[in-house]
Length: 413
Image (cartoon, rainbow, N blue to C red; front, top):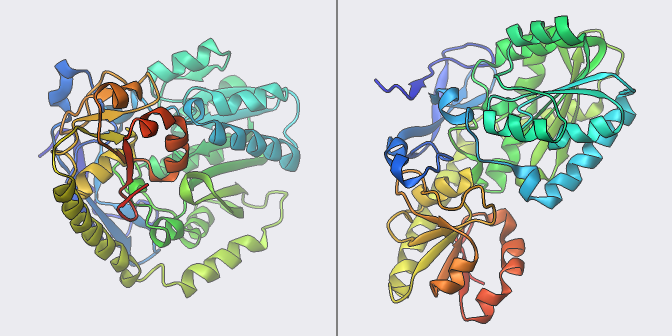
């Protein structure tokens, strides 16, 4: 029995035990546990990574649930801080929420998983009263320094009651790329319901299951993402908890996501046609059938073999680097068998440099190391950002270095 994770045998949305495994990936360590060298041993344990489909409500979830305190009390990912495209998109998102749902001066906006406070800052600039809730103490400190009050804890129904007593009802509760990371999602959603004003809204973004599998976004399949949401199970889930799913918008974030808005049952806003339209599309595409996931399994096996052949061909004459240290990078390293061939990893964020990777303990360096170490090839471990990575590193290319795409196909750029 592990102290780090447990195996969940019931659906976290409807609590049914009718679960069928539809995709088994190779086990990996906790994917974002980059550590100093003297603590490297803490990241060795391999954890199952398989996906289970609920035969009752159609939800898709991982079997293994890692103790969230192990992952989130000190967290390295700061997406808005290091990705200007994402930061710009968030500004438009915040402005849309303010305009569409009438978030006015001094209205309370609460964000769970508020990270470094970057998203809430847009609401603060509009005059709203803001409060972040994030268990990562290091990020809560960063947020506080920028003027975003943050509770360093996990959001729950109990925490929502505390906020309501101290700050009143919320006009908006936000959850960006965190709702899928929650195991006790029933309790958390009850907390959202408790906190919302009668005309309040719950807005969240999450990876969209249809995009994950139709676009082969396997780097998004990891232990932090416990649930792979689609619209039908979400609509039914909110209905059961006395809420309504109002709108669902497909957005390009992280390769393909959905931005959802819900309100209290009987709230003031009309349900958009987008909800039914996307459910119809999901049904037509067979999203709730096991066969929908088989092409992903076959593709991983094929690319793994393609990668093995490529590595044999280039040999070991010069160092091989991996570019990117996100959660998805760990997934790609393990699924494609790269752990023993990478001499070092590169990341633009100084926050991650001078650490070692989960499991294989590959050292993380800055981009200049590509040139200093004369790396012959740099494998791109962040496929969605390949163009940005190469644009930033023209001196390495001019020196003769080669960037290599490893997913969804192997190719030298």
